[in-house]
Length: 197
Image (spheres, helix red, strand yellow):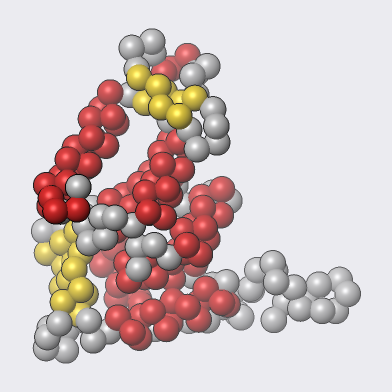
């Protein structure tokens, strides 16, 4: 474990490449599926997949329920070791869309420049395909969207765009296509889960 100037282990210190835990073949396979198809827009946890941990077709991903406990255990261990945080938090959030720590770690990764806000918007859409009422996911989406919008003082924003309140308390300008996409998402989720809305 990395040491501070006083010789004590530090909680914030980054692990060296040699000290980072190695991803299991299962986690590597899941990562490779997301790398091969960054447009995965829906997933499901499926029982009885006959020993196949994942199936990915036409931007849809099936994850065998048999491998979920192993993936979650590994993700929690990686989170505790502060290693492979993007992969670890993605697994935790697919397993539980309201995993508060997972969303907060991803916010820190966005702030540090390791993740793009637009990728977070995509991830929240994926989480909503199974967990449409995940409040922490909606809060994270709002936060990430606020970081993708130009500020109201930005010359590139244009006068015809509607304003939305940013999570930071300022005003950001949302282009009409973005507003349309967000309204479409809400309408789709309301149709899929009509008894909840």
